[in-house]
Amino acid sequence: MNNWFTVKVKYTKQLENGTFKRVSEPYMLAAMTFTDAEARIYEELGALIRGEFTVVGIARTDVHDIFAYDDSETWYKCKVTYDKIDDEGDKKKTISQNYLVTATNVKDAFTRVQESLSTLMIDFKITIVAESPIVEIFPYNADDVAPINNVISEIIDEISPANDVFESENLTQNKGVIFSASGSDEEESESDLVDELDDENE
Image (cartoon, rainbow, N blue to C red):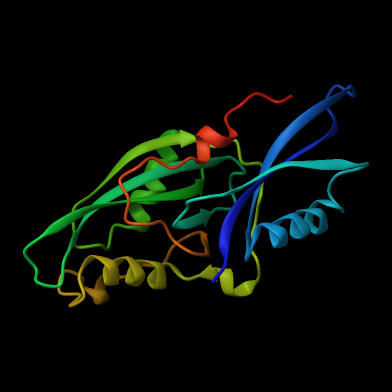
């Protein structure tokens, strides 16, 4: 299974006013290993960036799913929490998962994630919505793009083995595209996505 990696590259960028500036920008892509991620970023950005660029950092990124919409290029990170029921049905554990979604603003990002998970018959909370510095995301191949129904089913499988809290008849189609790779762990810790990439352009 592929993992998501954030790759930070440094290059000379031409600004809108015609001047040039040395910048460091983060991109995210699906890859099998760190080596694969480095090779892929050179392949993907070779045709997009004029001149030379240097990879200055690669970090594994904890993202459960990515919702891409055509009407915006700005990425937002959303943290979602919910309770997982054990096999015996008497104990609960809080699960935290991170999502990325394109949106025009924070409110729009919140609404889109909420709508995408609205068919879950459980209580979940969107505890964090913050703009991400990610410039662009590259899925590994066509298998990384999954329908919203599959994503919801995967979450339900984690919550309850019996799937008795979910009504499949209420599934709705997502208006965007979902890039799927390996999901987040059963951890309550914050994602390092923003912390790792929030430093200023060098």
